[in-house]
Length: 393
Image (cartoon, rainbow, N blue to C red; front, side, top):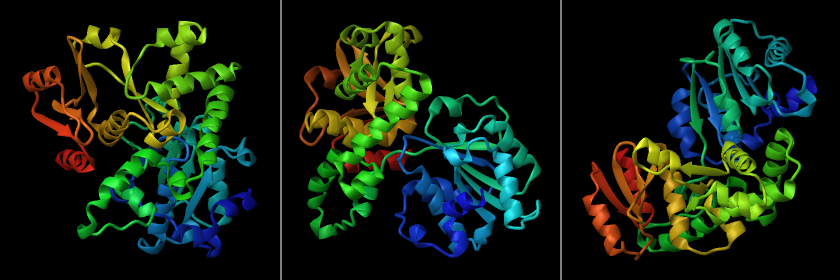
């Protein structure tokens, strides 16, 4: 195991090259950094390759160079590594302490990628939390496996979802600096951002093969292989239909008929794509029975992935998808009344309608928008409008 651990932790031997080239993320500054010095276990959840590992390594970089934590006191490992299969977290940590001659009283930092690949991970983390001087940051690409905790870490943990790069992170990753005198260039670059999305590696490489490989890996490995689904072609067709319906309501029954599968299979596939963070469902606002019987609206995890599979079209829908991702923490629902739809209303009664650039509300939309009871009302047309809402949260 020693060789594997050294490969995962090159900083033990003074190799900081990969740490130094990491790009900063807003999530690190606003979420991880304030939680590096408390006792709570931090869980990072989100799509594969969305940047969870990079956030962990940004934490390691900060602890090394600003926190003055010795390199030997930090362990990063990915628990989906075949070479580590059969090893428990407790065994790995005990080996790590022995290898680096760390007493049980010395504080260590554990960065555990894909934690849900480890059986009984919650019990093991609780044991470490209770018995050792340890700070734990763990990640998962499966929402359901992370959600299936049995309460052992209640009060001991906090969970953050990692989303695609926002517009300003996109500019940073592309090394694009826009001066105030060139502010007019934002329109061009923002549309470029909506086109390519915010998957970090794709932003850096612009390699279409990367997106295709990423989605194939999720469909084949995280969904089909894990859940024993043999109809791969049907699963891929289901995914393509989800991309086509992004920003629109979706009928599980209609998809079942189109693909010639049972309603039960359609519902199962839908849940699995939600579970791997590929799509997000949004419920209709209203009474409980309306919420239950009305179709869900769905949004893609990234505008670049959506555009890759559907082509660059319907900019209004793409912009709406972007707004959803930026504001999803508000627990959004959509409004549908007398055949008229408005995009979002938040849990805190913030009404939001997306109209990209010069789009206008229809007469009936405007009437519904005006009569809706809400604490705040916004018509968002560009990234500035969305950031103003973010500031008010």
